Picture 1 (cartoon, rainbow, N blue to C red):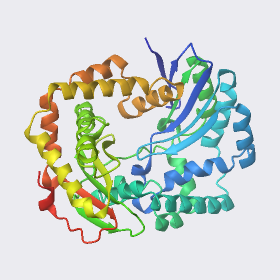
Picture 2 (cartoon, rainbow, N blue to C red):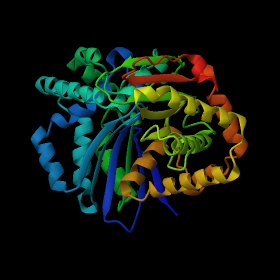
Picture 3 (cartoon, helix red, strand yellow):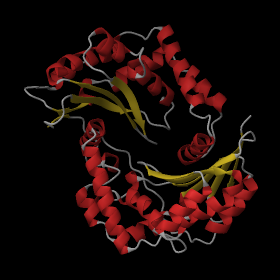
Picture 4 (cartoon, helix red, strand yellow):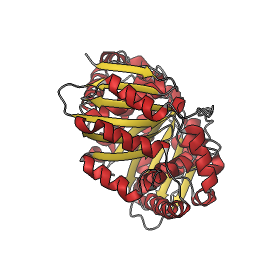
Length: 421
């Protein structure tokens, strides 16, 4: 049985922990209940910018001291920003928990945001944007999101754009940080050799004095704008194909059914797209289907990369598989294989303390409570053949599909008649 405890401190900070007695390590995280979808569009990229800047000096530590102390702890120090949250984490020996907490809390509560460091880090993020430009599948995804949700913050790049990045002033950065980095918007999570009561004491010591700004992340549901986008990129030898549609999100009862549908379509080497496009026709080295799930919505995305002359053939094969999923019930044996794959992936993904730490934090952020392994496995088992076919019919409607082709397009011409399924 998992030993998970939760406490909300006097300041409104949530603390969750899972004790794992067989470990000598602790994975610790401080999570912000806000990501890029909570930014004003004109400040796109500000959450990610702050994630970079907190490592550039605090009231008690210089940039070098932060790096030296991280190395002294002997573990790992990391951070990321997503569409719906940001996180600062460390994995250390249990004896270093208090010192690691002091370091992470210092980053989150007392960054200096010095003007010279802001300008240096602005240049670093510009280089990060150029890296996306040089990574074809990342760029195709960014183009897809931007065109699918053009008026919503989920359609904006997490990094922002060059235009919005240059627009971010120190005053705007400090204001955003003060508004959202307050206790009710934070979750402290830990997994491993950790005493919950000690973790709560540390959290109260470092956060309970911080006043609540009253600001909470605000979400609005996105309205899709499916379209076909063809973008030339001559230096690519293969054309990137990204076809997708909106699907239910994390809080939907259909979440597991969406994941299984995606797995059947393109989740492994036995999946329909891999077998058809690669094994039967040899038209692509890699092809896959996957999901991007957010709190209130999601995307089911199909990806393939092929030579320009084969784009239409690959697209026809993908559309044919979508039509087959709508017309024909998935054989019970195929669904059972997808369920076993999903159950194994779930269990194997939670074998480390860092994965457990992230899992309990995300459960708190998205659902406000913890879901047991048995509940997760039962929800996978509960998906029926009818559920999969119903979702396929709901999601894969021709007018709801969006397509991005990126690369050397030559004389490729595609319209919605080619997506009819």
